[in-house]
Image 1 (cartoon, rainbow, N blue to C red):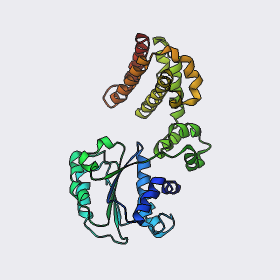
Image 2 (image 1 turned 90 degrees about the vertical axis):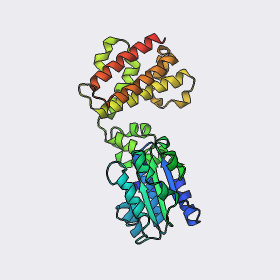
Image 3 (image 1 turned 30 degrees about the vertical axis):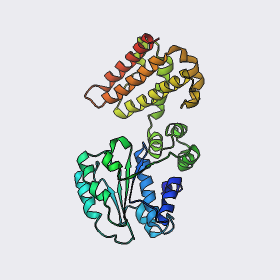
Image 4 (image 1 turned 60 degrees about the vertical axis):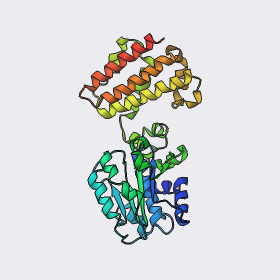
Length: 321
C-alpha cells in the first residue's frame, strides 16, 4: 500500500491527472521503464488517481477497490502470463460496455512487449477509435518491442526511476537487510529491481564474486576458484549482470568518463587495474558477457558456459593489449 503514495507523487502522474481534470487527456498511453514491477504500480497508481475524486487519496472506496483489484471499471491484462489474442478479443468487447460505477473505464495492459504481433494487431481498431471515456494504460519494458502501428496510436511516456532519497523511504522497513546498501545502489531507483536484491540472499555473494574476478582473475589457474559449487539461472544472471557493470566501469575510466562509473565504492581499485585492460579488450569482454547471458537459455550447462566465459575473458585481455 505504501508504494502507491510515492507513485502518486510522481511528476508525470501529477501532470496526467491535471490534464484529466482540464479535459486535455488522451485516450491511450504507452509507458516504459525497464522494470516490470515499477510499470505495474505506476499504471495502477495512475488508474487510482483517475477514479478518485481527490486524485488518489488512498482512503476512499474507489482507491481501496483499485488497490484490492476489485474496481469493476478497471480491467487488467494479461489474464495469464502473456498478453494473448484472447485477451485482445476480450478488450474489444469490454471497451464497448458502459462503466458500472465510475464515469470512465480504464483498460490496463501490462508488458505488451510480451505478446505476439497477432495479439497486438487485434487491438489496433479499438485503439484508433476508442469508445468515449475509455482509457488505455499500456506498459512495456522496451518501446522497440511494441508494433509501430500500436505506438503510433498511443502517447509514449518514459517512467523515471525514483531518486535514492525516495527509494530509501520506500524500503525503510528493510534497513536491517544485509543487502540494503547494495539494493539502493544497484536497484537504480526501480522498485522491482530494488526489492529483488533485498530478497535475494545470494546477491551479496554474486556481487563480491564478480568484483573479485575483475580485480584478481589473472591466469587460467584462477578459473576454478571462481566457479560456484551450485549455480542456478538466477545466480548466473546476477553474477553476469554485476560482472558487466564492473567491466563497464573500467571502460568508463579508460575513456575518461569517470563521472559515469556506477560502482563508485570501487573506483580507487578500478583505477589501480585500468592499465591491465585496453579499450578494445573491455568492449570485447562486454560482448562475451552478453553472449553468455543469451546462452543460458539453451541446453548447455551453466557451469560450462561460465568456465568458458572466464577463459575467454583471459584470452581477450591478453590478445587485445
